[in-house]
Length: 315
Picture 1 (cartoon, one colour):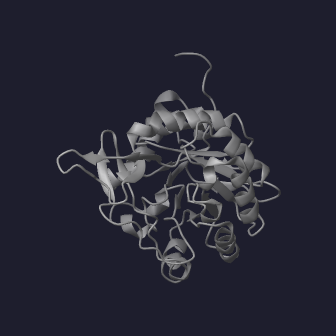
Picture 2 (cartoon, rainbow, N blue to C red):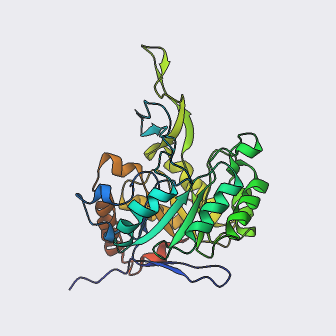
């Protein structure tokens, strides 16, 4: 009889908040999975440890001008611009569906100033169907001159504290990779009351059509994701996991079960998968099956045993 693999992971809560228990370490990343219904024809979202919704703002957003997506070597660039229906329509039209998915629901928050972030958190705090909030620090801080919140430790600390004061839900802070060292940002998030940090968000890049001599994206710049950024994601997860006493949710270029294992070994307690699902809508169940197969072949009884288990030195 084949031994059963325990895929469950626990993300400890902070300051008396309950632990977040996931049936497995695989979540769908924000912006790539919609609100769950978009992938229902391919697999049951209940298979996932959780899903992170599209970035949610107080008011509806149309997003950036097209073209919004282009393929690159080893990945893709997107400049969607956080298009979303806004808080009121989300609560009325998307939340009822999310509530029936039988998986952890994390809502990603987008705003351009601290007041709007605080208002989003306050209004979602009492919504029982939501298990956690994730704040997007790659947003441009309008009040701070347009610089992204996530490139300044003090801005990270201040914004995290503002949101923390408005909610008792587990609070994840999503860190940008567009800095030389993510550790000061992670430390600032921890100091201000974050329950976890998630990284990495997309890398800022661009693509050019040599024939038309024009940018390939309507907004010129976009976020690079896919296998090309995995080495950066692994490096930053490894650094941050050794800097803070918080769960780390890793992401960036995951396309296989072995990729998941590598992130867990680097110190991630769970992972998010995004771009892989745009190329293969059934990527999540495939990756989960590959993770289980890896554990069985390597004699790993509990996937949680892999977290932070990287051996020092070269292989």
